[in-house]
Length: 291
Image (cartoon, rainbow, N blue to C red; front, top):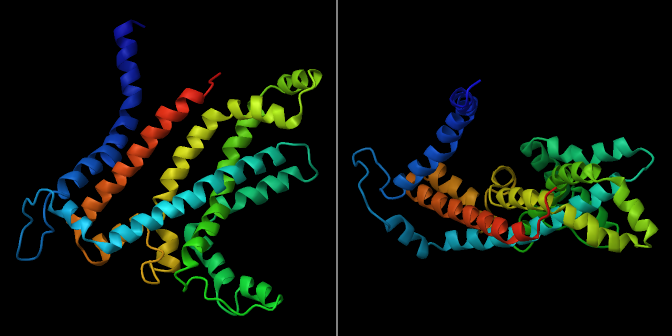
């Protein structure tokens, strides 16, 4: 096959993926940016160009700032916990244990459950008086607590549920990376008298950095795309204490039908995700060792 034919053949193989990426990722992003510069069309009033007016409205929108604060707190609470727990679980189930396959299955099961099913499971945990958590704390002399109805606890309840669901998903990637590591590394370290903690810090963790970068990018995206649990459990309440950016976008665009302002909020969300991912690649890439 000539070089020209090989090039054409390669582009033809990439064409289906390129079309799907263009149709469902790049074009919607450009269309959203375009819509954010126009007003919301009404029945008797077509949309008109308003420039940055929708973005200027965010400055005086207290719910937007509340959702932004909630989302940052939610990300800081869930990302490190999910990644660290996933790594600990992967290290554990990578060892030779009795019932190893069942333990791996138990850790991974929350990941395959539908989002609404997970919300209903945790709704049983958090229900006042009858929920599992209140039944446990009552045995220690404490009273009932409205976990999802209290602005001081609702966001932390969402964090616990997210860590429970996401850690098993990230564990799979760490487990796959650990199983690709040569056992000769551990044998050589043992001969040199290297302890387990030193081996983990000097050998295992650096070799896991490519996986860690992948997991972190996915964890950040996951922290800013939660909406199912909020709609099913709290609706953003009480008093917007559990509203995240995507749930607020959902309310603005589909409940109040302010599509232009919803598009502007989406542009801000995309900018946050893009900037965070770029920062991760630029900073962590320097500490990654590829094989």
